[in-house]
Length: 476
Ligand SMILES: Cc1cc2nc3c(=O)[nH]c(=O)nc-3n(C[C@H](O)[C@H](O)[C@H](O)COP(=O)(O)OP(=O)(O)OC[C@H]3O[C@@H](n4cnc5c(N)ncnc54)[C@H](O)[C@@H]3O)c2cc1C
Image 1 (cartoon, rainbow, N blue to C red):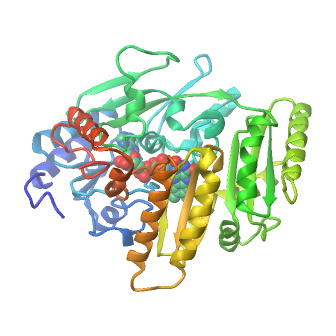
Image 2 (cartoon, protein in one colour):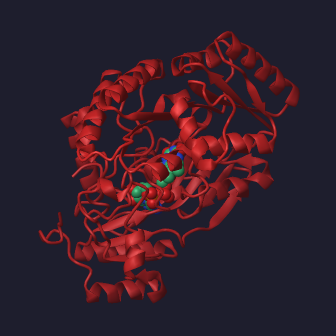
Image 3 (tube, protein in one colour):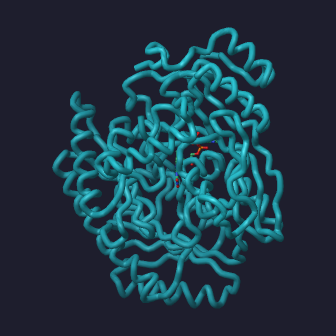
């Protein structure tokens, strides 16, 4: 599949190379085949693509002016451009589906300002998200939008994916934590959407149109994020239950009966715990339990936090919890979160044949979704490693094939289609945080009608009439 061949996009020829070198400097333009291969991938395994998608050149701009000049060149010549953050994406969003130029933002990695009066940080898109948290700490503040991949992924990639994470239930996903964006439009024009303002109804809310737009509308060159007070005490509860159903059914009671809004409510089924123990070489207690919840509480007064977790712990035990473990120091908390955050990597380390899904349903429907996932696994002879953000209904369903069957692709595809059909019936949707990208594009029509897909296409065209920015993603 090549639109270059079909004549839609121009190739990166020697004239383009000369201009790119002039814009960026030769040290920021790479044709090294090894680099091109690495920068043409994200975390979706290559076995899922029908073609070997490769960039023709990778560039590393250092500032907005260079990005703008690059886009003016790409528009003039009609060259495909794919923005790239850290490449931790799970939907092929940063894969250059039509070759052309990959723009890596790794050299635009400065924290420009922490502003403790407006409670904001202004950063470049290539800043590793966890670094924003570290920079805010001396001010007694935190950036609360960081996803589980926050130690590796970039803030620009997080905004482009509207990344979620484990604190969505209290603080919202990335978009809810972004106030302003400097962007370069495909034409090369530079503009700001939003700013250091908490309120803004002047024009349309373009900040939140761009959040989650997966790099198909514009390139993000600066981000103003919201900072919030850093709590002085944090406690994590690890709560094993005999069954996933019991664990999930308890979740709504945390908010209604205990009247507590935790920072996180995460779950891991038995298979998740097993695979992660094998991967990290240590296990959490009650490994044989059907499911574990991790509930994070935060506050500033240790006594009232202790009251909260004791009350919540009692409620857990009355609802069938096998035990309640309290992690109230850095070591025990790190150990617990290491296990939770390593499940995705463990799946990719041990399996090559799988569907790695990111469906989200209304929280009331999570128990039914999990029952259906068990049924699908049994029917197709697959292992279900299911875990994730149960507090907001976003479950990472991994349908894994143990044996290397020749028909693995079709079996997994049938299982995936059943999962999608169940998800749609339950009022859910295709992706909660990993995005559509290249990987899920063909399934969009299961969840969105033609009116909505047509509107997305027209919005894309309004931003990018030539179709040069991240072509092949979300919609054609
Ligand atoms: C182990 C693991 C755990 C993860 N946990 C989570 C999680 O908890 N929550 C979650 O939401 N995701 C998670 N992810 C997925 C991934 O980390 C997120 O999608 C993340 O936001 C991607 O950021 P990135 O910098 O790696 O972007 P990339 O993968 O490089 O790119 C992602 C998309 O953003 C676009 N893009 C990147 N930078 C820009 C820019 N400056 N301007 C315009 N477009 C841009 C790209 O074109 C692409 O479409 C996880 C992934 C892994 C491997």
